[in-house]
Length: 152
Image 1 (cartoon, helix red, strand yellow):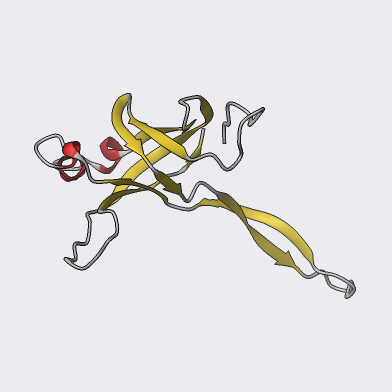
Image 2 (cartoon, helix red, strand yellow; image 1 turned 180 degrees about the vertical axis):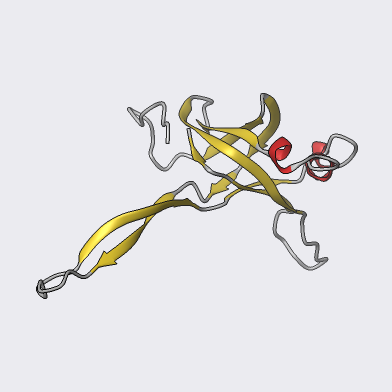
């Protein structure tokens, strides 16, 4: 994972926004990002004759899917919407042509970049539109989810 920037002199609880770029094409701003993590599977090895402990060795490195969410706005409908982009992304292409590089940059409310992540071998796997209810008071949101092969 490549992280550029450090929280120096900034309010740690400040609201962030996330700019997302896929293969050099900006997808816009998002207000929530979750799933930026990596974890090693641990293998337990029991040695014969050594009963006092079990060796734990790192195995495969796995990454969670990354979910990006934002409120609906004027760009959420029409030919250049996130839903339309998602629907077009894999049509008539093989698996290797769908793999993308996704750049995510976190900005403070004042517009200063705080951190950057680059997802290697990313595949957009889910777009979720808003749920509407006439008695609801929540903000209508759309979510884009990527599976990926790791951070660069």
